[in-house]
Length: 142
Image (cartoon, one colour):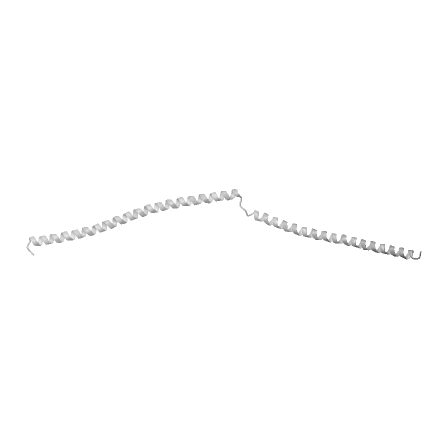
């Protein structure tokens, strides 16, 4: 019987030690799970913060975008301005061409008149010399 008591006590001590170890492991498992939850929560918060910053950046960028209606309205205004300027320039070029054509015609007429005058002067000189020569011949001065 004396063998049973120490054996029994020993078994009890082993059981208590085993139970305490199991309890410590279980407690450690809870601590690790809590730490893992804390890390996961922290990581989720960090990711959500990043997503919120990205969303805010998109919202900010969106304020600088043109709406289709505004683009079409402003594009139409630019097209109208370009068309008006093109028409004005075409009118001015047409008027300038008309003025240039008139100036060219006037210049050509002046050139014709000046070349005709040269011929007329030459004709007058020739006629004058012929008349002087005829007069001298008639007067027998020759």
